[in-house]
Length: 166
Image (cartoon, rainbow, N blue to C red; front, side):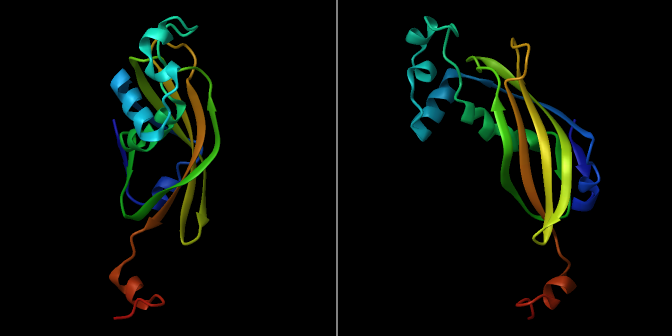
């Protein structure tokens, strides 16, 4: 169930809290192949199911960056922040891929807020993200992701800002 926060400030008040979780997609061989074609990540352990069957993983595994790239859309299933003019991915402080991601695994993302602070006319939030895959006991990825949000300004604020006069 997605949570809705009335403003960036209300979202920033969530420091230290669990934001929730979201089920993600099943990582199919087609997704792995398409990601490999797009990024050039076509190593046999990802794209050769026959050869990968003989590996220690028993089949192909997803590219770690494929899972990392899914975080923003999965976060959309966890929360919405109203009154945002611009929301950007600022980066990651720490990302660890702690287990391989077998083909045909369903992902589940859990998020909590570690920090929120004013930054460059907006608010920077740092979230802890833990991604699990079914059939794998421990997380497959643990990351600290950073987003930057700018609140929607009123017409009066826009008209009085530098360069904003009409």
